[in-house]
Length: 132
Image (cartoon, rainbow, N blue to C red; front, side):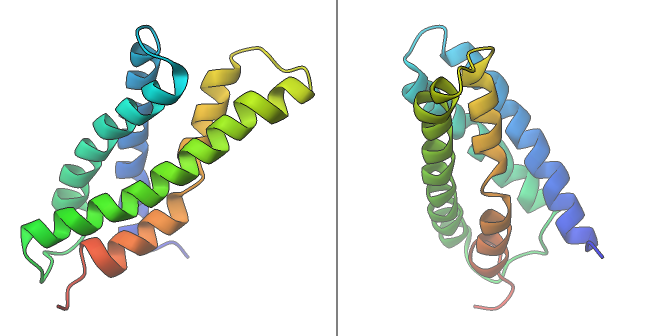
């Protein structure tokens, strides 16, 4: 059974993912695809930090600066996963199967979803831990 906290994390992550995904589309109008992914990640991570702090995790036992450090570290790992999946799909798998219809958007959406489990565990154990 899914815990209430994990459920809230999924909802908050969904909101942050929509911010990430939507801003990537806008950024793609002015910068190359990999740069747009990275910039969109910054928009998503900012909203995710605030929403997770407010609605998902209990008040942490560590200082705000340390929370922010671990949140960034966990999300940089997630960015690496998102980037790897998005680029592998867009530049290797999709062309090899002849898929071109909204391939950047589909690749990025799959890339965003990929690190949910590692992010939840990282934030629970590091970013918002309740014991020092």
